Image (cartoon, rainbow, N blue to C red; front, top):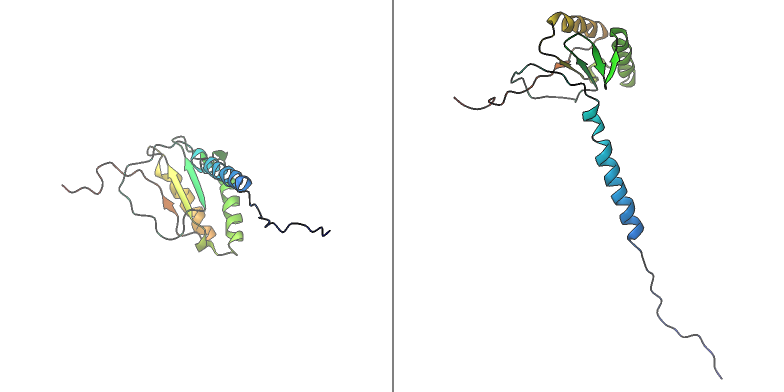
Length: 145
């Protein structure tokens, strides 16, 4: 008697279910965390101006200033010294090259320009020359007469 194992073909089964679960969880995670950038902004009534399109590097630091002159970074109330400290840290991260650090100021439309002038002077002393002032684009901007 000859006993031998049958030589049936064995098939490897690759179950995609765990991979699909992981991908769906990653999609949910990224959709959820992408909303934090919008939530971190302080509501500011910016002036309506057509402005220019953003060029170059996107803003590394966004500073929100309300009508009372209070400054916020990522929703946290900060002082002018805190702003200096944060910007110096960002400049250090870029190897000391202040031109690679972008700053966006989102100021309330009723804010006196003296607040912006103070910030601009401090930025210049740090070597930051390319900061931007955020505006709301009017609804009829870009339309012909």
